[in-house]
Length: 578
Image (cartoon, rainbow, N blue to C red):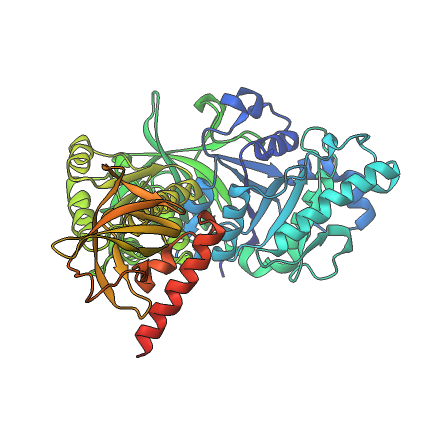
């Protein structure tokens, strides 16, 4: 019978830029990765294996106090820029991640990427804990002192920020509370106040993760040690002296040097493992290769760098399985099930990895944005042509959304020539936000064009004894009682009948563009005869169809114009009901 073991839980660390993801892991592993990252922002995917002896060292007194019996061998953390690693940490039907830490700066609260992380975690149904970071920045906070022993004004400030965070989280459909108040962790998200800088709250955070893993995830963590390995590709990269390698998380079974593996790609392929490089405990997979151990085998859960032939064709977010050609169709089908090739109108999506594509599809569907095509790869001419075809009927859908995908030069030129918009970003929420803002700007521009064509509300009276010509065109003197008239507007009687169009306006023998309330001017009216359709002394209005009345910006009108508009609307509705 195959040996059953309890593997390490795989924990993904997510959060907004600069909220302290890497700093938290630095405290745990005692390294200085964050200080050497450009701008303090994580630049590459990392996987950190934290053995239990390190956790015992950090949590010592707390571990003894809680008398927690620990059966798991440690924790495997994923550290990543944005959410790329998490969305690539995928397998059919869900996520490889067992738990997640959402790091939030308690002083700033939820930011756009925090919200995006919550939505992704919800979609993949991954349990998470909120690490409310940077409590050390609360005025008066004394490091290494429990919350209950801080001064009252400090506690007051903490709870003000804490309850704001609880409120923000609730708007996204989750109940949350201070970890020490929670009885049922399946119903309430635990918030653990921490300082990643000085370590406040980190022991409690680790204990919560250990407890959740052992109590609620035992079934998922129990694996067969001798089973052929299954894993997910986190990143494909060129390593100096090693060629193209893949960083992989093994979540089940064993992978050995010399094993034949099927690697996920647009066209899955079989290769053989030449070498396995495993980070030393507390190191991580972004460090130079001399920090790796050359090993003969790795067991789940492990982060490992694989060296093999043809890995330049591998695709992040795709699976790798120990096995041969018999598994190729299985992987191919998994990729095809995610990609979209639809006959209906919608936007064109391109992404660099299968995980990114899946996350982008889910985000757009949640916003009810239709998708015509969603594929992995570079933006090409065929993508532009498809978007152009859609734009002929649906202007706002005939676009390309490119997430981290290269745009081929020919495609970029064709898009410029044909007026097809390509939106490109490496943050999902920003990509969608840019697209939505463009739609808003375009709609406002179109609305402004329409408003220019809509006449402003006006009410005029034909002055008695000032008929200069009866027809072809009729020329009469008028007084603008309210609003503004301009050449080109149509006129309407009080019974709703349209009677001619203003061809020209003159004042003191000079042609003018418009006349306002109080002005007495002469106007030339086409298609009307004075004495038939209109008479001296008649009151007439500018003709505005009901659909255009609804488009007018009421706030931009004067009080008198609003009153006239109400009169015009009443006349139009009466005419409609006849």
